[in-house]
Length: 339
Image (cartoon, rainbow, N blue to C red):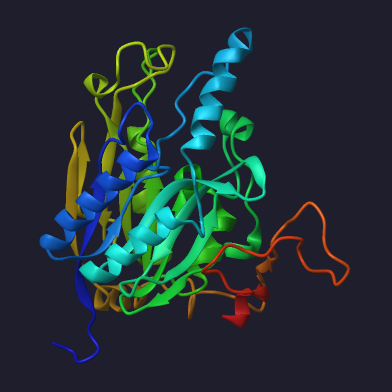
């Protein structure tokens, strides 16, 4: 074994949030799942998109506007802040269990009472919140719920487990956003998905999660951990968001740098999917193709990342009116050849 080898077990959580939505109960389930994964030897545990309190699977039928407004109000009241006590609770448990955690959640932002982001928290095994990144481009109807993120938190985190980053749902199909993470030397990619229902017209997104994860691993020569929500219809209380589509199928797994599954994909059941990550396999794969090294032309193609936090106004010194979330650091601007 090479003295610099870094190998460890990872866990992709495929689970159902507590319904009807309840942030306290879903956070308790997060903690229980973390304990289970740590007991099985996992050192990195990844959760699905907006697992706390849930993926907002409700209708936006304007002919029933009062219903949509009530459901959005319920979502806001059950969302959490990046520097709030709820996330700190998860961080303390991560330290106690000696695990790294990536958690998808609906993020409230003070002092704006109805401003929501679709966010991922990156927490290390010492209980440090390394950063909270916000989905850059909410898709389709999501634009009516979530505010778009910005370039401030396009960051891959240096940890004892390697360079870890992540994207949410259809961000995993965005070439520039993907490359912005790969070019920072990403070794482990955490892909958080909602799981989606099977639609009555026969359309399915099972192949989307599968194809995007394998392609990301091949393009970035990295490991990909897919964590997706699973919701069986029997978990949904009778009459709850009755016009929504349910039966979220999951699709969680772990993919190696050659685009092959180490574990999974798992469908149609609640599970924690475990896989073994060995970072030396990235070196072997990059011998064939290295998009961040010998096989890239930074003299021709340069990626400019504007790492600034957007705000509705700035103070007289030009700084954002409200400081970034706790655990984030000032980044400035970078180009691909700065990394």
